[in-house]
Image (cartoon, rainbow, N blue to C red):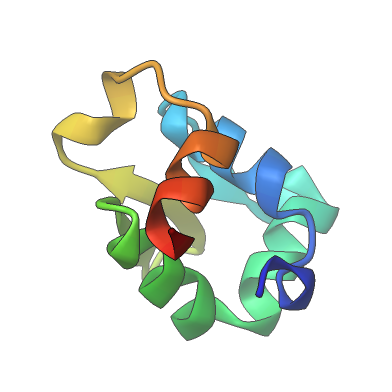
Amino acid sequence: MTEQFERLDEIFRELSRGKHLSAADGDLFSALEKRPTDYEALFKQLGFQLEIDARGFYYFFGSNKGRRITFSVLLFSSIS
């Protein structure tokens, strides 16, 4: 499942820390740009709301961004 998502671990780590990803973030932003709705759906299944701002950046909306959670734990729990 995750093989279809480029740079997923890095994207999740940065977004969950509260970072906004924009074109200045190079490959991470490019990966999101290629499949925004797929990333949005995946993160929604994991309890995160990926926002796509019209000004050209991505971020997690809501209270989850401050939680200390690793992506591998979330992914494992979603496929078990």
